[in-house]
Image (cartoon, rainbow, N blue to C red; front, side):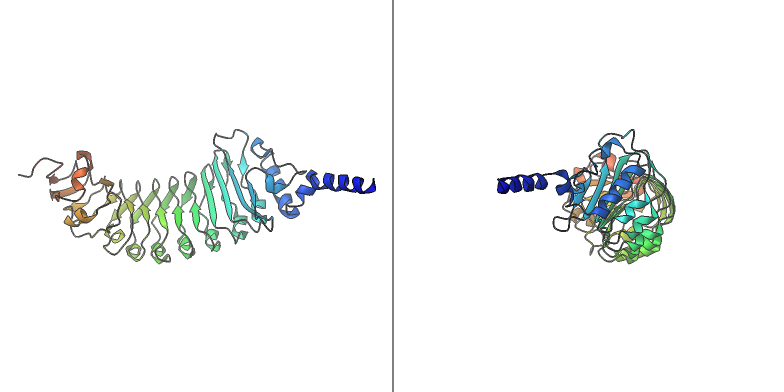
Length: 332
């Protein structure tokens, strides 16, 4: 009878919420509950019950062996009406965090929390589709393990900090759809090669594209819809492996004739600039070109025949100075 009682007691203990909660690090749980409190106990975090294992909570992932919190992803597929406030300082007290994300939270306001700088193991930081404001902070350069930095679709303002180029492991940088001003930092040419994909579109950036960007070979570059001026030829080169370049809707003015394009190019968008010269014959050798637009520039001469250049519609070429040849009307 005693043995049966002991088995019953051990079974009860094993499957009780208290026993399960022991998987979760107590300090991590305390921090998460503070985060929940700071956000005024939103419905999105209803599963964050102090009597249960925090490794089982919604938005949270733990390391399978250490059970420390490695991921905190707070996002909503629909706008959260009661999820409001600023990023709480306590997010910096999850020392094993590798992924931190706040997404589609329109009532998330205030600056990017400085205590995030303490998250030295962080590999992915996504704060997007929110109403955070203030500058892109310098302290992000301290997160040297960071691979993905996405601060798109917010209300960030001011210049882009040059210190971001000190992130040695960065694979992707997204600062698009903000209110950023000033130039693209010259230091971006010193990213460790090949360099991260860089998306800075839909801002108010101005000045020339740094010549130093000739030193990097990112997979994707999108500087569209800014106020950038001058040359963009340094973004290209026959020795590069870049796949996508979009510098449309700027004030760029350079001679396209002698630009050499990488054979890896899949998409090229130069529309709505002040680009002169001819379309280079070398573009006929870019076999995988799927997207192409040079409309609304000052290009002239016959469109080279061959490759994929005749696969694109008229609107990829129109509103230039004197371009002609298929798919445009025949040259005189």
